[in-house]
Image (cartoon, rainbow, N blue to C red; front, top):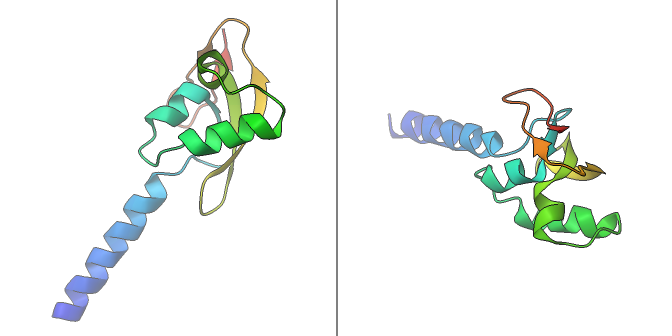
Length: 97
């Protein structure tokens, strides 16, 4: 009985951990990544630097990132919004306004 309980607990923990990642194929506004439970701050900053962007509040909040997926929810920079980035809602792409 203890083994079954431990297995069920482990399964729930794995499902919860994977829910923290972005969904592959969806584009997110930077500000959305800051609201995802699995802290994306370091990944957002690394993605900006990799593409030669300065790490700043405006660049983080109004940049569109693509979720590449994988076990760590890998991301890459797509575009910067001159206005602001609007969230598309669950399972929908973010976009520039």
